[in-house]
Image (tube, rainbow, N blue to C red):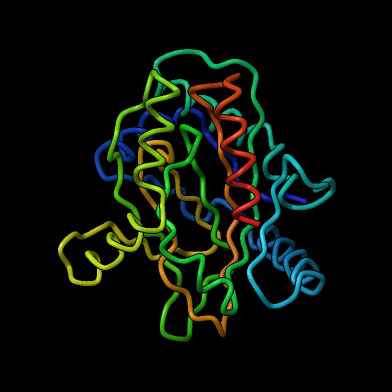
Length: 246
């Protein structure tokens, strides 16, 4: 079964140029209709077990063999594209790393509380695949981001301190209020299922916007390229963030 259309590594310079200049890049209709249908069937099975609230699956700590999440993250063309984008963004080769894949299902009141949780990712490149985006209700859970807000940090400690300052309840509350009063204006992406959206997750402060609790917003996220690969401090923080996300 074909999940994804042919990915041309020669597109990497244009994708990175779009990320740098407009904050994101998109490959339209990158995932086939058959691939989307398989994802949705699997999500129905996952949601039937997890219930109608928010839930997430992390591919590096949970068994995802023979799932569409694994099929896409292990696709050779997709991995090559992600690696080239990450290495060219940093200007250096990276040690052997895997793509971290995540399934997020935002729904119900618990999902509503996951909105506007602005953060920086630990990885250079983040790829977002919308699978189900609400077409009804008051809010669709659009991607909201302040693109390329910071540089790649050479210091692990500085990175941690910066994220601690910005990724807390008080900072997020104040930022959400400022957005509501239009004191600051983030970029908002109207997500279309089947497209793959790329951005510098490490550099961009981002979150999903409010999502109507009556509907399900399902996305697959793929992260590649840890600039601080091998750092025990980074690994510890990632583990804590996983527990909070769950």
